[in-house]
Length: 404
Image (cartoon, rainbow, N blue to C red; front, side, top):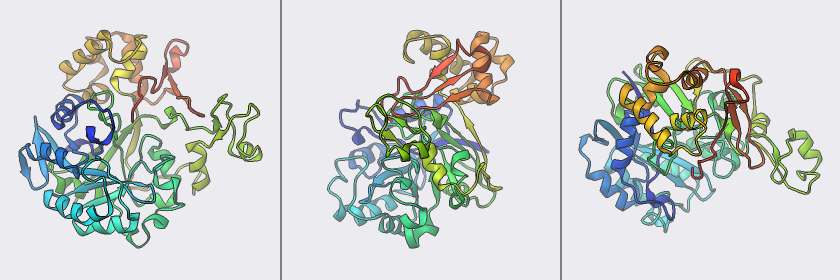
């Protein structure tokens, strides 16, 4: 069976001033989104763990709400300012891991993503000791991704490198970019939303599909390890070109630069602003291959926008939360079962029975990978253009997305 998974979310305890939300909110919206399994996020936080334990546990470490399965997950920040994603097999493992790191952190009971006073190596040791899976979160993030601090996986995890189970691509990367780097070829890539908000425009904006026999932690673990016929079969995510720092550009006037031009100018623009190195140039400096070369086990990567965003731009709405956008989204989800089914698997002729041609063409262009990406840089978001309606359908990405 094929399942869709978003394994990296956050509780309201990770962000100050966050709106009160519950784990059931995430599970409810996961169902309409089309997800089969989600990570609980923030399972080290005692108040969030209380919500987790209120759900039925159908198997050790696998919970369920409204037919959506949940597994125990958390993100932590180590003393080298790197974020790591950890997937736990059961609540006993969570308790044991919590005991191991508690002497090294003052935020484990107050912050959903605790910062601990130990390095990535010891953290990985403790995770493996309790039977958890660990990997770097959003590896290309310019502030807390592994490559923002270390030149390689081995420099970060040292003798624990062989225990790293996966690489989370994050919003700044995709398979094409990551597979330019040889050391990443052996790893399974995860695509996750890293969202603090259960709204469908945030939840599963990136997700991974796996071939498994059951929707449980054990089966998912085998899929991440690519064992017993279980494996990842598709990564889906927002085009990384949408990011504010994909291209190297001035943060003041947004003039674009090549890496070498920026270096020649000592990263100072003629306008007086600072030039911010883009993710694309950071990856190019590490690249072993040009163009990218994919290992035989690597599944396809598909670039998509959330359905709310596509509807918003095609209908020229002010934001994704207007009545028009909400009504159209609800109609599609109620008719075809979920957002994922609507965007990826429903035949276009079926879609044409209830939505106008203009929206069908937009969805088709994403399915056929014929959209044009205009990269962001220097603090401005990128955009996507539908090729045959270029002046009319330029979709400015992330314009309404003010939180990760």
